[in-house]
Image (cartoon, rainbow, N blue to C red):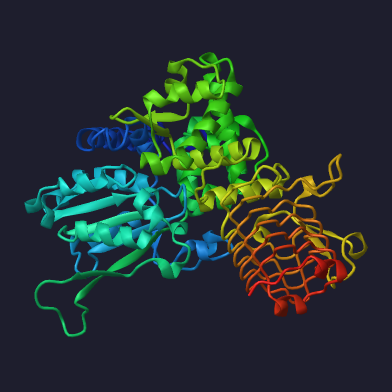
Length: 601
């Protein structure tokens, strides 16, 4: 509206000037609000990092880890129901509560909540929460009522760190034990280790333990009883024993994801923010994990199609290699070293008692595999962080797990045997599903309990193509290996692999190599194993009902208590196999099968 129009409706020039000035003030006020909104979280990040650097020793958490944990931090929610129990963990219906508020309430009056275990999947921000809550606590008035102590359990001297806290201060100290799933003793026996930690920590005001949800094979295996009794009188309806209360980190909501994007991409980077929103819309279940959400900017720069979580890690590694080209021209050598180191860290964690490597071992490892990089390149230009004791570890454990799987698929599994983590199995199955990996380099891998049917990309083969005896089509899980190679063989090598309890029902493994594999209690019903090699395999209690084992090599295989009901053993070699007459009587056999069969009772 022009000034002439305003004058016609009764506005004087003085009133018009007042309107203009008021409008200008509103614009300036809005601009100031945006500037303050941009500055405030960044000032809080700086303040939190400063607090953590002063109060948390660098030997526990290095400065880079503190920076990553506090930069663009969005406070998460928590819930009492496992969000991983449903098909889409973002749609689990449960009561959510801001985690910081819940923790404030629990620590204010611990009562029954003396022992709390905070559970979440990889990349959900368990360590980031502890670090940010630690800084939050030291800024609040509650620090006068009780203190917080942080102890990472992935250090070999974690028990000593707990014991070094003075006894007289423990009654008003909250002990935070980070990463139970990375504790070497817990990996060997989680129940025994939890009992040991609770015994060490029972005199503290409250004990908070963080752990990956999938570290426990079943929900029921997460202990609830601590064995610690309350001192003094208790109410008639109250238990005298303390319980281990479970709390789950909730995945980010759409509002929390949007809050992060606004923080990460300010108003003057609106175009990048919109590009990030497009990526988020495509993979909402992945970016609900803060670890992966933090790398959306890398995906914006790469502009690649993302369908699986392993692709995000690949984008992270690719972006890192691109950034380091100015210092390391041979990107392939740097990647080769990273994969070799990931495998070395995982397979030798028992001997080192940690997933870290001393600086003196970096160069010899590179030389061992003919990787020609300078010592400073291995230390300063890799995906590693250094602690105060001179040990090196990957910036995040999930990065190590991704590089481990990539290394195994290209180089094979060494003689060292370590059970794979749930995330490693997830990476593997996603790669198979996407067609970027086969199973021809997994000899000796420990994949116990893996349900390959759940993950692999499946396609069906007509009845006439494989096995007319079966009522349903055979499922072929591996598109890249669905056709035979030049020698006419399906190159699936799972020799010496640990597949105990794994589910391979209905899958296609014709001519595959399972020699020496552990398939104890595996579900193999109606699977295609024609001409497969099971020599020396452990098939005790395996369910092989209606499986096709025609012309399979079962020489010296242990089939005791295996279910062979309606299994096709025509032409199979059962020489020296450990199997009883009653089992074979339920299978489909021919004279060739019976000719070389020895019975063991």
